[in-house]
Image (tube, rainbow, N blue to C red; front, side, top):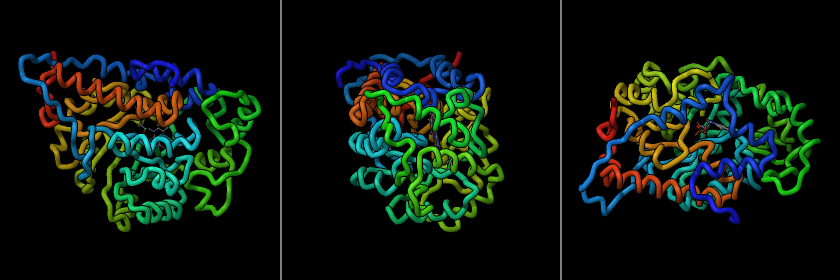
Length: 381
Ligand code: FNR
Protein backbone atom coordinates (compact mmCIF):
# COMPACT_ATOMS: atom_id res chain seq x y z
CA UNK A 1 0.00 0.00 0.00
CA UNK A 2 1.30 3.44 -0.83
CA UNK A 3 -0.25 5.14 2.18
CA UNK A 4 0.97 4.62 5.71
CA UNK A 5 -1.83 3.54 8.01
CA UNK A 6 -0.98 3.70 11.66
CA UNK A 7 -4.41 3.35 13.24
CA UNK A 8 -7.42 1.38 12.08
CA UNK A 9 -9.53 4.55 11.96
CA UNK A 10 -7.24 5.86 9.19
CA UNK A 11 -8.73 3.24 6.89
CA UNK A 12 -12.05 5.03 7.05
CA UNK A 13 -10.53 8.18 5.59
CA UNK A 14 -8.72 6.17 2.92
CA UNK A 15 -12.03 4.45 2.08
CA UNK A 16 -13.78 7.80 1.83
CA UNK A 17 -11.26 8.92 -0.77
CA UNK A 18 -11.41 5.69 -2.77
CA UNK A 19 -15.16 5.01 -2.85
CA UNK A 20 -17.89 6.64 -4.87
CA UNK A 21 -20.00 8.58 -2.35
CA UNK A 22 -23.06 6.32 -2.61
CA UNK A 23 -20.96 3.34 -1.58
CA UNK A 24 -19.08 5.12 1.21
CA UNK A 25 -22.36 6.24 2.73
CA UNK A 26 -23.97 2.82 2.34
CA UNK A 27 -21.09 1.49 4.46
CA UNK A 28 -20.58 4.35 6.88
CA UNK A 29 -24.18 5.31 7.58
CA UNK A 30 -26.78 4.24 10.13
CA UNK A 31 -30.49 4.61 10.73
CA UNK A 32 -32.49 7.80 11.32
CA UNK A 33 -30.38 10.43 13.12
CA UNK A 34 -27.60 7.88 13.78
CA UNK A 35 -27.78 8.19 17.60
CA UNK A 36 -27.02 4.49 18.11
CA UNK A 37 -24.30 4.50 15.46
CA UNK A 38 -22.49 7.20 17.44
CA UNK A 39 -23.30 5.62 20.83
CA UNK A 40 -21.66 2.35 19.77
CA UNK A 41 -18.35 4.15 19.45
CA UNK A 42 -18.78 6.69 22.25
CA UNK A 43 -19.87 4.13 24.86
CA UNK A 44 -16.84 1.98 24.12
CA UNK A 45 -14.75 5.12 24.55
CA UNK A 46 -16.26 5.71 27.99
CA UNK A 47 -15.34 2.26 29.36
CA UNK A 48 -12.46 2.59 31.81
CA UNK A 49 -9.83 -0.14 32.24
CA UNK A 50 -7.81 -0.82 35.35
CA UNK A 51 -4.07 -0.39 34.94
CA UNK A 52 -2.35 -3.26 36.74
CA UNK A 53 1.43 -3.41 37.03
CA UNK A 54 4.29 -5.75 38.02
CA UNK A 55 2.47 -8.91 36.88
CA UNK A 56 4.98 -10.50 34.44
CA UNK A 57 3.26 -9.88 31.14
CA UNK A 58 6.13 -11.18 29.02
CA UNK A 59 4.04 -13.98 27.41
CA UNK A 60 0.64 -12.93 26.07
CA UNK A 61 -1.72 -15.47 24.49
CA UNK A 62 -4.65 -14.40 22.34
CA UNK A 63 -5.55 -17.90 21.18
CA UNK A 64 -9.10 -19.01 21.81
CA UNK A 65 -11.94 -21.22 20.64
CA UNK A 66 -15.11 -19.89 19.08
CA UNK A 67 -17.97 -22.38 18.86
CA UNK A 68 -15.43 -25.20 18.97
CA UNK A 69 -13.01 -23.83 16.36
CA UNK A 70 -9.48 -22.77 17.28
CA UNK A 71 -8.87 -19.09 16.48
CA UNK A 72 -5.66 -17.06 16.63
CA UNK A 73 -7.60 -14.08 17.95
CA UNK A 74 -10.98 -13.70 19.71
CA UNK A 75 -12.35 -12.22 16.50
CA UNK A 76 -14.49 -12.99 13.48
CA UNK A 77 -15.36 -10.89 10.43
CA UNK A 78 -19.05 -9.92 10.47
CA UNK A 79 -21.39 -10.53 7.55
CA UNK A 80 -21.58 -7.45 5.34
CA UNK A 81 -24.19 -7.51 2.57
CA UNK A 82 -22.74 -6.56 -0.82
CA UNK A 83 -19.31 -6.43 0.86
CA UNK A 84 -17.80 -7.74 -2.34
CA UNK A 85 -18.48 -4.41 -4.06
CA UNK A 86 -15.68 -2.71 -2.14
CA UNK A 87 -12.88 -4.40 -4.05
CA UNK A 88 -12.75 -6.72 -7.04
CA UNK A 89 -14.42 -10.02 -6.04
CA UNK A 90 -14.10 -8.49 -2.59
CA UNK A 91 -15.40 -11.39 -0.51
CA UNK A 92 -12.77 -13.72 -1.96
CA UNK A 93 -10.06 -11.26 -0.86
CA UNK A 94 -11.59 -11.07 2.62
CA UNK A 95 -11.75 -14.88 2.86
CA UNK A 96 -8.02 -15.13 2.13
CA UNK A 97 -7.16 -12.42 4.68
CA UNK A 98 -9.29 -14.14 7.36
CA UNK A 99 -7.59 -17.47 6.75
CA UNK A 100 -4.16 -15.81 6.96
CA UNK A 101 -5.13 -14.28 10.31
CA UNK A 102 -6.61 -17.56 11.55
CA UNK A 103 -10.10 -16.21 12.28
CA UNK A 104 -13.58 -17.06 10.93
CA UNK A 105 -15.25 -15.08 8.17
CA UNK A 106 -19.06 -14.95 8.30
CA UNK A 107 -20.38 -14.67 4.75
CA UNK A 108 -23.61 -12.70 4.30
CA UNK A 109 -26.68 -14.18 2.59
CA UNK A 110 -26.40 -11.22 0.26
CA UNK A 111 -22.74 -11.52 -0.62
CA UNK A 112 -21.74 -10.31 -4.04
CA UNK A 113 -19.76 -13.46 -4.86
CA UNK A 114 -21.49 -16.84 -4.62
CA UNK A 115 -20.73 -18.82 -1.44
CA UNK A 116 -19.06 -21.56 -3.53
CA UNK A 117 -16.51 -19.06 -4.90
CA UNK A 118 -15.77 -17.68 -1.41
CA UNK A 119 -15.32 -21.10 0.18
CA UNK A 120 -12.97 -22.11 -2.65
CA UNK A 121 -10.96 -18.88 -2.24
CA UNK A 122 -10.62 -19.43 1.50
CA UNK A 123 -8.65 -22.66 0.88
CA UNK A 124 -9.72 -24.38 4.04
CA UNK A 125 -10.28 -21.22 6.11
CA UNK A 126 -13.08 -21.09 8.62
CA UNK A 127 -16.21 -19.92 6.78
CA UNK A 128 -19.52 -19.43 8.61
CA UNK A 129 -22.73 -18.55 6.77
CA UNK A 130 -25.22 -15.85 7.76
CA UNK A 131 -28.87 -16.21 6.82
CA UNK A 132 -31.76 -13.78 6.84
CA UNK A 133 -35.36 -14.91 6.88
CA UNK A 134 -36.60 -14.13 3.42
CA UNK A 135 -40.12 -14.47 2.09
CA UNK A 136 -38.76 -16.97 -0.39
CA UNK A 137 -38.38 -19.95 1.97
CA UNK A 138 -37.31 -22.10 -0.99
CA UNK A 139 -34.25 -19.88 -1.33
CA UNK A 140 -33.44 -20.27 2.36
CA UNK A 141 -33.66 -24.05 2.24
CA UNK A 142 -31.66 -24.28 -0.98
CA UNK A 143 -29.04 -21.93 0.46
CA UNK A 144 -28.57 -24.02 3.59
CA UNK A 145 -28.25 -27.16 1.49
CA UNK A 146 -25.54 -25.43 -0.56
CA UNK A 147 -23.74 -24.33 2.63
CA UNK A 148 -23.84 -27.87 4.04
CA UNK A 149 -22.57 -29.35 0.79
CA UNK A 150 -19.61 -26.95 1.04
CA UNK A 151 -18.79 -28.16 4.56
CA UNK A 152 -20.02 -25.02 6.33
CA UNK A 153 -21.12 -26.00 9.83
CA UNK A 154 -22.00 -22.70 11.52
CA UNK A 155 -25.12 -20.76 10.72
CA UNK A 156 -25.49 -17.21 11.93
CA UNK A 157 -29.16 -16.37 11.78
CA UNK A 158 -29.77 -12.63 11.78
CA UNK A 159 -32.98 -11.61 13.51
CA UNK A 160 -32.78 -7.82 13.83
CA UNK A 161 -33.86 -7.12 10.27
CA UNK A 162 -37.51 -8.07 9.74
CA UNK A 163 -37.38 -4.93 7.60
CA UNK A 164 -34.51 -2.59 6.78
CA UNK A 165 -34.02 0.41 9.07
CA UNK A 166 -34.62 3.93 7.78
CA UNK A 167 -31.20 4.83 6.40
CA UNK A 168 -31.49 8.32 5.08
CA UNK A 169 -28.02 8.49 3.58
CA UNK A 170 -29.05 5.62 1.28
CA UNK A 171 -32.36 7.25 0.48
CA UNK A 172 -30.54 10.41 -0.54
CA UNK A 173 -28.00 8.59 -2.67
CA UNK A 174 -30.51 6.22 -4.30
CA UNK A 175 -28.83 3.10 -2.87
CA UNK A 176 -32.04 1.84 -1.28
CA UNK A 177 -35.28 1.08 -3.02
CA UNK A 178 -36.14 -0.73 -6.19
CA UNK A 179 -32.93 -0.28 -8.17
CA UNK A 180 -34.06 2.80 -10.11
CA UNK A 181 -31.89 4.97 -7.87
CA UNK A 182 -28.94 2.70 -8.56
CA UNK A 183 -29.46 3.09 -12.27
CA UNK A 184 -29.18 6.85 -11.79
CA UNK A 185 -26.02 6.39 -9.73
CA UNK A 186 -24.57 4.17 -12.41
CA UNK A 187 -24.98 6.92 -15.00
CA UNK A 188 -23.11 9.32 -12.74
CA UNK A 189 -20.18 7.40 -11.25
CA UNK A 190 -17.93 6.38 -14.10
CA UNK A 191 -14.74 7.71 -12.58
CA UNK A 192 -11.47 5.81 -12.96
CA UNK A 193 -9.48 4.85 -9.86
CA UNK A 194 -12.40 4.17 -7.58
CA UNK A 195 -12.38 1.08 -5.37
CA UNK A 196 -15.51 -0.20 -7.01
CA UNK A 197 -15.97 -2.35 -10.08
CA UNK A 198 -18.21 -0.18 -12.25
CA UNK A 199 -18.66 -3.14 -14.59
CA UNK A 200 -20.95 -4.60 -11.94
CA UNK A 201 -23.66 -2.12 -12.78
CA UNK A 202 -26.05 -2.33 -15.64
CA UNK A 203 -24.91 -5.77 -16.84
CA UNK A 204 -26.46 -9.07 -15.75
CA UNK A 205 -23.89 -11.23 -13.90
CA UNK A 206 -23.66 -14.45 -11.97
CA UNK A 207 -24.32 -12.38 -8.88
CA UNK A 208 -24.32 -13.39 -5.27
CA UNK A 209 -26.22 -16.42 -4.08
CA UNK A 210 -29.35 -15.51 -5.96
CA UNK A 211 -28.35 -16.05 -9.61
CA UNK A 212 -27.70 -19.76 -9.09
CA UNK A 213 -31.04 -20.09 -7.30
CA UNK A 214 -33.01 -18.21 -9.94
CA UNK A 215 -31.08 -19.97 -12.69
CA UNK A 216 -30.19 -16.76 -14.53
CA UNK A 217 -27.79 -13.85 -14.49
CA UNK A 218 -29.03 -10.71 -12.80
CA UNK A 219 -27.89 -7.09 -12.63
CA UNK A 220 -26.86 -5.38 -9.42
CA UNK A 221 -30.00 -3.25 -9.64
CA UNK A 222 -32.21 -6.32 -9.90
CA UNK A 223 -30.34 -7.96 -7.03
CA UNK A 224 -31.04 -5.01 -4.75
CA UNK A 225 -34.65 -4.91 -5.94
CA UNK A 226 -35.05 -8.66 -5.19
CA UNK A 227 -33.65 -8.10 -1.73
CA UNK A 228 -35.86 -5.14 -0.98
CA UNK A 229 -38.96 -7.24 -1.71
CA UNK A 230 -37.80 -10.27 0.21
CA UNK A 231 -37.39 -9.17 3.82
CA UNK A 232 -40.02 -10.94 5.88
CA UNK A 233 -41.54 -9.17 8.89
CA UNK A 234 -43.49 -12.30 9.88
CA UNK A 235 -40.36 -14.03 11.22
CA UNK A 236 -40.61 -15.57 14.69
CA UNK A 237 -39.18 -18.46 16.74
CA UNK A 238 -41.15 -20.98 14.65
CA UNK A 239 -38.97 -20.09 11.68
CA UNK A 240 -35.91 -21.02 13.72
CA UNK A 241 -37.52 -24.34 14.65
CA UNK A 242 -38.19 -24.91 10.95
CA UNK A 243 -34.53 -24.26 10.12
CA UNK A 244 -33.34 -26.53 12.86
CA UNK A 245 -35.47 -29.34 11.45
CA UNK A 246 -33.03 -29.62 8.53
CA UNK A 247 -29.85 -27.79 9.68
CA UNK A 248 -27.60 -30.17 11.62
CA UNK A 249 -24.86 -27.61 12.35
CA UNK A 250 -24.46 -24.97 15.02
CA UNK A 251 -26.91 -22.06 15.22
CA UNK A 252 -25.92 -18.59 16.36
CA UNK A 253 -28.61 -15.92 16.64
CA UNK A 254 -27.38 -12.46 15.65
CA UNK A 255 -29.04 -9.23 16.63
CA UNK A 256 -29.89 -9.81 20.31
CA UNK A 257 -29.97 -6.67 22.42
CA UNK A 258 -32.43 -7.55 25.14
CA UNK A 259 -32.02 -9.89 28.09
CA UNK A 260 -35.44 -11.50 27.56
CA UNK A 261 -34.61 -12.36 23.95
CA UNK A 262 -31.26 -13.76 25.08
CA UNK A 263 -33.07 -16.03 27.55
CA UNK A 264 -35.43 -17.14 24.77
CA UNK A 265 -32.33 -18.04 22.75
CA UNK A 266 -31.11 -20.16 25.67
CA UNK A 267 -34.52 -21.89 25.86
CA UNK A 268 -34.48 -22.46 22.11
CA UNK A 269 -31.14 -24.21 22.53
CA UNK A 270 -29.06 -21.86 20.37
CA UNK A 271 -25.33 -22.50 20.41
CA UNK A 272 -24.55 -18.80 20.52
CA UNK A 273 -25.84 -15.26 20.18
CA UNK A 274 -24.36 -12.07 18.78
CA UNK A 275 -25.19 -9.05 20.90
CA UNK A 276 -25.57 -6.46 18.17
CA UNK A 277 -27.61 -3.51 17.01
CA UNK A 278 -26.49 -4.11 13.43
CA UNK A 279 -23.96 -1.30 13.71
CA UNK A 280 -26.70 1.25 14.40
CA UNK A 281 -28.41 0.53 11.09
CA UNK A 282 -31.77 -0.73 12.37
CA UNK A 283 -33.67 0.88 15.26
CA UNK A 284 -32.05 4.17 16.16
CA UNK A 285 -31.88 4.98 19.89
CA UNK A 286 -31.51 1.40 21.05
CA UNK A 287 -28.56 0.95 23.43
CA UNK A 288 -25.04 0.38 22.23
CA UNK A 289 -23.75 -3.16 22.44
CA UNK A 290 -21.29 -2.10 25.15
CA UNK A 291 -24.25 -0.87 27.20
CA UNK A 292 -26.49 -3.91 26.62
CA UNK A 293 -23.85 -6.63 26.91
CA UNK A 294 -23.18 -6.98 30.68
CA UNK A 295 -26.83 -7.69 31.57
CA UNK A 296 -27.17 -10.20 28.77
CA UNK A 297 -23.91 -11.99 29.61
CA UNK A 298 -24.97 -12.22 33.24
CA UNK A 299 -28.45 -13.54 32.36
CA UNK A 300 -27.28 -16.29 30.00
CA UNK A 301 -24.49 -17.23 32.40
CA UNK A 302 -22.39 -19.15 29.84
CA UNK A 303 -25.26 -21.43 28.79
CA UNK A 304 -24.43 -20.37 25.23
CA UNK A 305 -21.55 -18.53 23.57
CA UNK A 306 -21.89 -14.75 23.64
CA UNK A 307 -20.36 -12.85 20.75
CA UNK A 308 -20.73 -9.09 20.32
CA UNK A 309 -20.26 -6.41 17.69
CA UNK A 310 -21.12 -2.80 16.78
CA UNK A 311 -18.66 0.05 17.04
CA UNK A 312 -15.46 -2.01 17.24
CA UNK A 313 -12.64 -0.16 15.54
CA UNK A 314 -9.51 -1.10 17.52
CA UNK A 315 -7.91 -3.89 19.51
CA UNK A 316 -8.67 -1.89 22.62
CA UNK A 317 -12.39 -2.01 21.73
CA UNK A 318 -12.08 -5.78 21.37
CA UNK A 319 -10.62 -6.05 24.87
CA UNK A 320 -13.43 -3.91 26.30
CA UNK A 321 -16.24 -6.04 24.81
CA UNK A 322 -14.50 -9.17 26.09
CA UNK A 323 -14.23 -7.63 29.55
CA UNK A 324 -17.94 -6.73 29.40
CA UNK A 325 -18.84 -10.39 28.89
CA UNK A 326 -18.30 -11.44 25.26
CA UNK A 327 -16.26 -14.51 24.38
CA UNK A 328 -15.59 -13.26 20.87
CA UNK A 329 -16.01 -10.03 18.92
CA UNK A 330 -17.07 -9.33 15.34
CA UNK A 331 -15.51 -6.63 13.21
CA UNK A 332 -17.92 -4.97 10.79
CA UNK A 333 -17.28 -1.68 9.03
CA UNK A 334 -13.66 -1.65 10.22
CA UNK A 335 -12.55 -4.41 7.86
CA UNK A 336 -14.62 -3.15 4.94
CA UNK A 337 -13.00 0.29 5.22
CA UNK A 338 -9.69 -1.59 5.00
CA UNK A 339 -10.91 -3.64 2.03
CA UNK A 340 -11.90 -0.48 0.18
CA UNK A 341 -8.62 1.20 1.09
CA UNK A 342 -6.28 -1.60 0.13
CA UNK A 343 -8.07 -4.80 -0.94
CA UNK A 344 -7.23 -8.06 0.84
CA UNK A 345 -3.82 -6.61 1.78
CA UNK A 346 -5.63 -3.78 3.54
CA UNK A 347 -7.66 -6.29 5.56
CA UNK A 348 -4.50 -8.15 6.54
CA UNK A 349 -2.89 -4.86 7.53
CA UNK A 350 -5.90 -3.97 9.68
CA UNK A 351 -5.95 -7.38 11.38
CA UNK A 352 -2.22 -7.01 12.16
CA UNK A 353 -2.93 -3.62 13.73
CA UNK A 354 -5.81 -4.98 15.79
CA UNK A 355 -3.68 -7.90 16.95
CA UNK A 356 -0.94 -5.49 18.08
CA UNK A 357 -3.42 -3.16 19.77
CA UNK A 358 -5.04 -6.05 21.65
CA UNK A 359 -1.64 -7.40 22.69
CA UNK A 360 -0.53 -3.99 23.97
CA UNK A 361 -3.83 -3.42 25.78
CA UNK A 362 -3.58 -6.81 27.51
CA UNK A 363 0.05 -6.15 28.44
CA UNK A 364 -0.72 -2.76 29.96
CA UNK A 365 -3.75 -4.07 31.85
CA UNK A 366 -1.69 -6.88 33.32
CA UNK A 367 -3.51 -9.88 31.80
CA UNK A 368 -1.73 -12.56 29.81
CA UNK A 369 -4.58 -14.84 28.68
CA UNK A 370 -8.13 -14.25 27.45
CA UNK A 371 -9.48 -16.36 30.33
CA UNK A 372 -8.34 -13.54 32.63
CA UNK A 373 -10.23 -10.87 30.69
CA UNK A 374 -13.23 -10.39 32.95
CA UNK A 375 -15.41 -7.54 34.30
CA UNK A 376 -12.87 -7.33 37.10
CA UNK A 377 -10.60 -5.47 34.64
CA UNK A 378 -13.00 -2.54 34.48
CA UNK A 379 -13.35 0.58 36.60
CA UNK A 380 -17.10 0.99 37.10
CA UNK A 381 -17.33 4.37 38.83
C1 FNR B 1 -24.08 -4.95 7.84
N1 FNR B 1 -24.51 -5.91 8.77
C2 FNR B 1 -25.06 -7.09 8.31
N2 FNR B 1 -25.44 -8.05 9.20
C3 FNR B 1 -25.93 -9.24 8.78
O1 FNR B 1 -26.23 -10.09 9.60
N3 FNR B 1 -26.07 -9.47 7.43
C4 FNR B 1 -25.73 -8.56 6.48
O2 FNR B 1 -25.86 -8.80 5.29
C5 FNR B 1 -25.24 -7.31 6.93
N4 FNR B 1 -24.93 -6.33 6.04
C6 FNR B 1 -24.31 -5.16 6.48
C7 FNR B 1 -23.89 -4.23 5.54
C8 FNR B 1 -23.20 -3.09 5.97
C9 FNR B 1 -22.71 -2.11 4.94
C10 FNR B 1 -22.94 -2.90 7.34
C11 FNR B 1 -22.15 -1.71 7.84
C12 FNR B 1 -23.39 -3.80 8.27
C13 FNR B 1 -24.23 -5.74 10.21
C14 FNR B 1 -22.84 -6.29 10.53
O3 FNR B 1 -22.80 -7.70 10.42
C15 FNR B 1 -22.39 -5.92 11.94
O4 FNR B 1 -23.39 -6.31 12.87
C16 FNR B 1 -22.14 -4.41 12.09
O5 FNR B 1 -21.41 -3.96 10.98
C17 FNR B 1 -21.37 -4.14 13.36
O6 FNR B 1 -21.17 -2.77 13.56
P1 FNR B 1 -19.83 -2.00 13.13
O7 FNR B 1 -18.67 -2.80 13.63
O8 FNR B 1 -19.85 -1.90 11.65
O9 FNR B 1 -19.98 -0.68 13.80
